Length: 226
Ligand code: ADP
Image 1 (tube, helix red, strand yellow):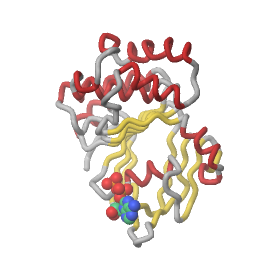
Image 2 (cartoon, helix red, strand yellow; image 1 turned 135 degrees about the vertical axis):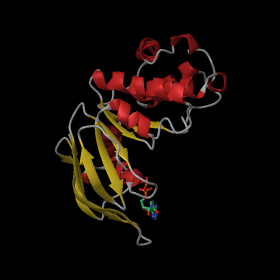
Image 3 (spheres, helix red, strand yellow; image 1 turned 60 degrees about the vertical axis):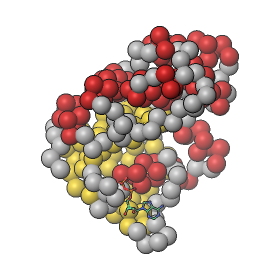
Image 4 (tube, protein in one colour; image 1 turned 135 degrees about the horizontal axis):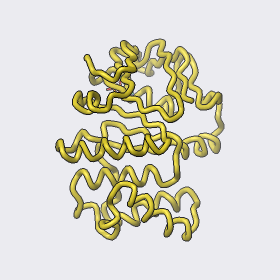
């Protein structure tokens, strides 16, 4: 479980990014976070990943205050979290296979594991036929599916997808959202940030609306009213 306990964040230049945010996310939940630019969404994710420290309050992951972890423990904790970004962040000179293998190597997985798991995870995102292609040979939606496969390959408990469809057309957006749903159905917690009202309404999952550093709505009916 992820728990933000009365968290505030004021940056050194006095920008107030979060104000007294309390929020809990259950294992296997699919939660969307919406809100205008500057609402505090990125700061919330950064505090969870221990990329920033809270000014007040605490952030827990399975009863551990993540901001009390040492450096090595933070690395271990982050391996529980797969990240997907709007701009894909694939390595352009590596094939699809190598992009995913690279992540696995970095987390100390063996060659045998890599050879077995890369095709498996590409199958999950329906992209096995593109295993030997380079990123520039893929559509935006395909690139994002590689990024999702890469995020999944170390079997994280949580996937954070930060505006994953921001660069995609409606057809590719639909595919990416379907894959996130499938991953969630298989048991992974999904945290999605998006501006896309259509996605939120079609998901019908919990929506957190943020504005000016506060959670202004927490709606389990899955509607986007902002
Ligand atoms: P969102 O992701 O919803 O656009 P952010 O968390 O990026 O919101 O930003 C929330 C507020 O914090 C904004 O006012 C922003 O200008 C400010 N902010 C974000 N990052 C920094 C930073 N590193 N230093 C100073 N202010 C920041």
